[in-house]
Image 1 (cartoon, one colour):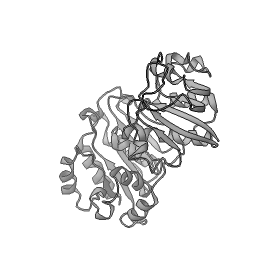
Image 2 (cartoon, one colour; image 1 turned 30 degrees about the horizontal axis):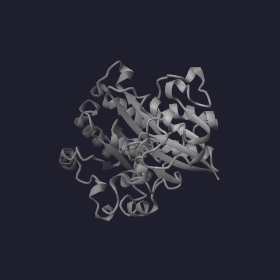
Image 3 (cartoon, helix red, strand yellow; image 1 turned 45 degrees about the horizontal axis):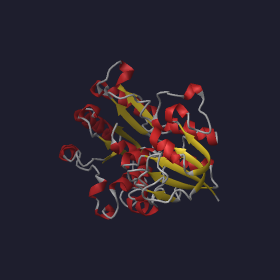
Image 4 (cartoon, helix red, strand yellow; image 1 turned 90 degrees about the horizontal axis):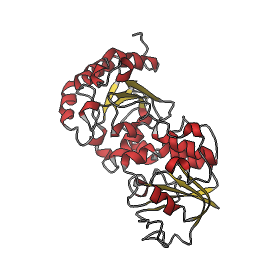
Length: 332
């Protein structure tokens, strides 16, 4: 069986979720290849917290291989890579020294964007070099050199069936649930909490049940939303789900939501499963650069009104966007 080695700097939870569509593209375009994932001096969540989710996409992981200088005879301080062979090596990082060392591994095709692709066996189109775009799009450009296909924008993240069965006992099929993630790691990324409260009141009037998602730094919001919405649901508090990881719960729950709304945050990556429409609010960052190609992902950016302040996004703008999803049977 043919093989492809994908080399990265390692993945923390946010990176790991962001790259899930890339794993789908690799398997979709190269179905008869074994996929090996390698990190240099870092670890990857693909061998830990996301291991079950990616098990159908990645066949083996090599972590912390600790590459030597390309001047050294031995490629890795940890593994004997001199006797390894891969049909394709797919270099996702851009350090020249790592790229040169990586290229010493026996291979048929080496693909890399390092130094504008000078070390790559397959050359990037000049028009696609140094373009500022969403991170994954640059990797799709590299993948196109191997097998060119349109990106599957309808890809839905794989969901653990056991969690889905348990969530089904909490979130009933006949109800209309909306997911709300009001926090973010940086204050300038947070739409005012009072706006989330007013929006939630509006959605309650439209017969939606509220499901709130809060990160570990956002527990101070919990009392605020509990005091305002007595029947609100916080899935991480459900005893039935305490055997699962929070990330798995968030991702699986999107199959039961009519839609979700979030700031640009870590939780937003977990909600970006494509199983339900997601409205993502942006303040200072470029929404195009930080938004993947997905059919069910809609952005509202302060830049649309020539601002960098997320608080300048109006509640009426968000409500209008929700109505455009056709999930409310009423006119704005």
